[in-house]
Image (cartoon, rainbow, N blue to C red; front, side, top):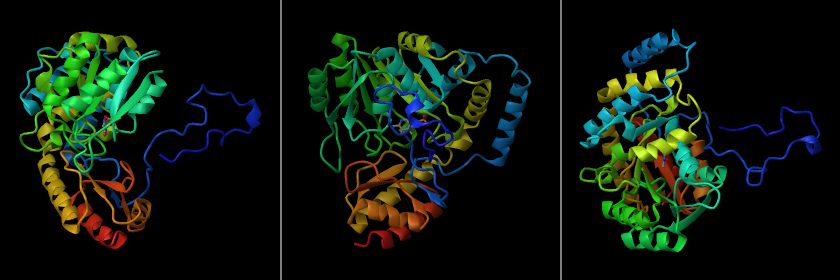
Length: 380
Ligand SMILES: *Cc1c(COP(=O)(O)O)cnc(C)c1O
């Protein structure tokens, strides 16, 4: 969101204003621009909204819940956690043995923040691999955790190997390692051997491995989920979200699966009643309609492959994507391509290595608009 300057509503002299702590003072709030464009392909949302029927069901569930809004919500969100476990069994064929292995919060952003609150902190280090999701360093900053990075392999694969990850763990001795699969902004998925090697390398120091699977449902056939490793690795957490494949970004629901001991630590740092009764009702209703909400994922995967193929045909270097976006290298300066696309009502994201842009997969109409805008914005 475009934000107002911090002091815009104040008439106090700047010298009277309280000073935030180091790292916060002078920092800008994070967020991609929310611009009114026809083709918003910048934050990897699902372009398909819920049907009228589902919206009505959600409305009824919220209306029922509203009758009890004088009471605090179930602070354990147990019914929702059970339903999330059942959903994972359906999606990945994994048996989640009990709801105590699942935890839910306001988006996987809050999940990650809670993990860093519980397992990071002063004197502790979290390790990630660049290019990575831009929020990770901010969770670390806010929880007084040191954030360190190692590099992914060269473009366009941006691969991680067991050797790279193990070497970085030995060098930095982190308490937390974050691996993202499929990765944002590259779109590339992780070989499970890499996650296994990381979990094993962290085990002697009792470190935590977080695999962020925000885009898991978009992965190509045959690409496994780290959920399959949970049974063998009690120091592994897999995080998921309803924001992307589930087309529910506006409801703010993310979750994790881990050993109940990890969940217990997160329960200590969560704010009381962090997940509103309304959010729980919306999420539960949406999970009951997963066939509809996930119905467009197959189409988006097909569109993603077509978009990647189109970019490759144009001569762009393109990172192989298992997500609902594609990162590609531009022929000319990326900022001028970004601006030229925006002039044509197409909003993408300038993230990743210099010279690369990331485009989310939209509806077939969005994707066609992107392709023709790119023809003019970045002539080859
Ligand atoms: C979008 C995204 C998330 C999801 O965030 P929510 O808070 O669940 O909306 C998490 N991790 C990565 C890498 C993402 O790109």
